[in-house]
Structures are given as structure tokens and as C-alpha cells.
Image (cartoon, rainbow, N blue to C red; front, side, top):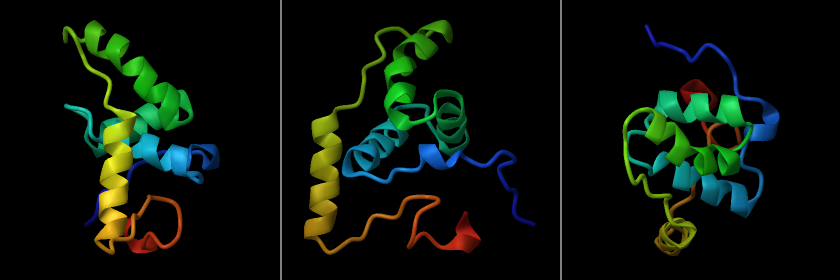
Length: 102
């Protein structure tokens, strides 16, 4: 049996622009951010941009000090390197992401 996340992401949270895709990558690259936390942050903040802007405060409330925001430049470089290697990024909720994995 495959467990499904209960609440779907709002359509507005899906990364339809290059900047939104970069911010999704930034968000998932934070320490202690897994799939469940990633989805929860998107549901709470609407998009990845305000979600990762809120992370230092969220981390501080959990006792984590000096939480560093992931670099936009590093995410852009990672996406560019993948594209240069022939990779195609897949983002949950957008084609060509396989529906059976959503």
C-alpha cells in the first residue's frame, strides 16, 4: 500500500516559472526538510518563496540557531548543470511528472 499525502497542494504553489522551480529546489535542499515538511511549508505559505523566507524563524522556534537560507545561485547552478548533462527536471504536479508517483 502506498501512503498518500492527504491535502493536495494548491495549483498556485506549483512551480510554473524558472524562478519558482529554483525556489522549490532551494526549499528541498534545506537541512531537515523532507517531502512531508516541504509539502507542509508549501501548504502553509502558498509558494516556495515565502516558505523559505520563513524558515529561519521556523527553525529558531524549534531551537535551531543560525539557520542559513539556501543560495539561489547554488540552486540555479544545480539546475543548469543538470540541464547541461541532459537531465530533465521533474516537479510534482507538473508534466512530465508521472501521475502514479504524485
